[in-house]
Image (cartoon, rainbow, N blue to C red; front, side, top):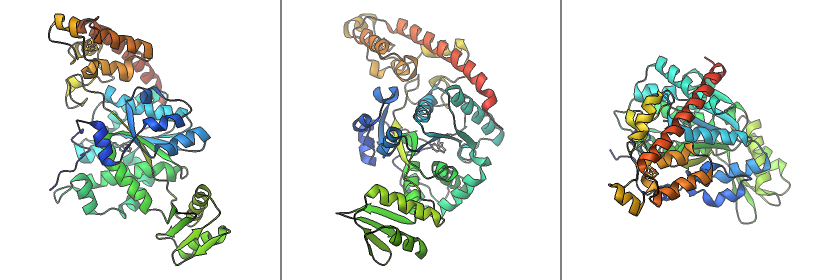
Length: 418
Ligand code: TRP
Ligand code: SF4
């Protein structure tokens, strides 16, 4: 069996992230930033680097038209600081007018990690408490409790076959069905806001490890459409994929200048946006979904304190939201830095913040003020501060952050149902 290039359940691709993006057709986000009325910290600090179809979202923010923002968490352990980035992305987009959705992927945790349902519930609620503590507003659900989601997953499953799952995830004859079901449930998650509310651009902020799911879902969203609308030279082509004849007739009637063919029409004199909107509403009037192909953003991962990935399976690598003060201090003080071997070298050469898990912790979450962050960086590279002192300062910030955060989590407790 050929190993997939990105396996959502085991690897975080290392090495040159820009190259990985390029290989998969993920675009750099920098050129899109000017389309946003306001650039959030996580984009300005180059934590969120890549996207698929983000201009659809930037446009919706700018024009104040509807859009959805959705992400999901697998409740296979306590939430930790490594999860905070996507949470902030969701909340920022809700503040920009997006309809917020959070899915707790208990089906996935149960199928792939063997998590008992009761534990899924406990961990899932912790994730929700974090989100509400950050100011989340919108819908939340557990996959296993959402019947409309499960129906949508079944419908989506009519458009995916086993060889596709093999190509994307490396599934083989030994893969159990529940694992495959959890994949199609995630596809349904990503499309869910569009059936729950209305078809609209949907943003899914994720790490690159989730990109296989995004690619699969984009394909399914397209396959579930009745029509394909494409801009051609001087006209718009509308093709029926599996539209009932009546729906195609309706398309033929609604535009003034159409050339009719078997199974498709060419439209002149009407712009793409208008054609696409009208075709979508005709599709919906005839029982179709009218899905927009979902958009995504990709962020870099905050490294674990032990160097590699922040992962619940390496307790020393993470800081969870429930850790005691003493443990937080100990973990931060023993975190991997970009410091030199000796104090003399540190003074002479300065430290290397890019390689320092603590600098990145500050960059991601602990230091909001750009000037303060720049000063930490300057002192580090100039050799003006020792790692010992810098770690102490960072530990102080983390302790304070968690203290405030936990208070907010407690206050959010009542917002969590079930
Ligand atoms: N698979 C994701 C994870 O492992 C969780 C998830 C489920 C998700 N559904 C989603 C993420 C929809 C984004 C969008 O964390
Ligand atoms: Fe990291 Fe601070 Fe040491 Fe620089 S001085 S390497 S930022 S711990």
